Amino acid sequence: LFINLVIGLSSVCFAFKNKNGRVALSFIAFILLENLFLLAPFNSALKPDYRYMAWLWVPWSVLFMNSLNSTNGLLKRLLFSCFILGIIVNIYILQTVEGAFWW
Image 1: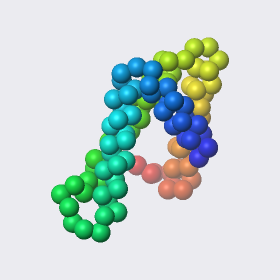
Image 2: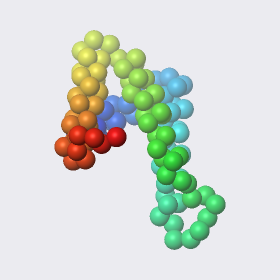
Image 3: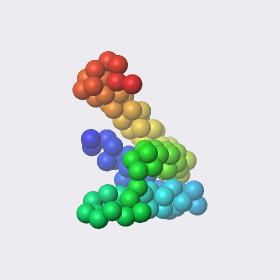
Image 4: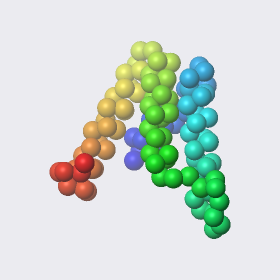
């Protein structure tokens, strides 16, 4: 979705404003690089489980909160509105594609 792209790019842009953002971005980069081993045709001890990829929401949420704390005024309200709109759209898609009981 376009909303998720805007939220992700703005969070990555504000990641370098403080130490927490840089640490969260480094975790995301490490996990995404580690995901390349899933495509490897050989068996390796470096292949990650899917359960480790499921924890990517933690550094992303740190980046989202970091971007909200790094801005003021109109940009902060715009980013917050994008976050709320993204949550609503994702819930709507889950309910329409997967059905009402998606959990």
